[in-house]
Length: 146
Image 1 (cartoon, rainbow, N blue to C red):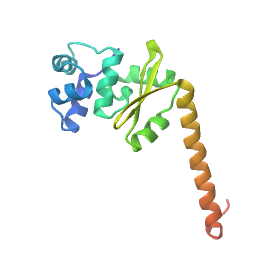
Image 2: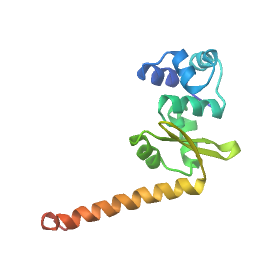
Image 3: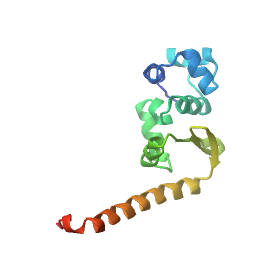
Image 4: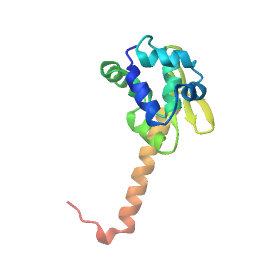
């Protein structure tokens, strides 16, 4: 997997973390993180997900451009869902080879199914549409049709 060690380092520094702190937060050995950042070793998907979760970024943010694009094309949840979850302090984690999915909450993780992620995404869109319609009705006198 093509990842940019510079990206890990950039996000780590932006978060004000040392390599040791990132190691403690992610559960990935400090010397391994150092090797990733120096480009001497590429992480397995599982470790990359742990680091992304610890840094509070989606996994594809740590990938090189071609790999990130390919990942997003094959991703069954959307970047929209990732952004919505991020707004409430959560993120999605996955190990595709094992079919293992989870939601990272601020206080822990919850294993979920692909169908549950799809339902979550659909319900957020439905809720926004519902709230927009309610606002339009509430302020009907200010609504200007096209």
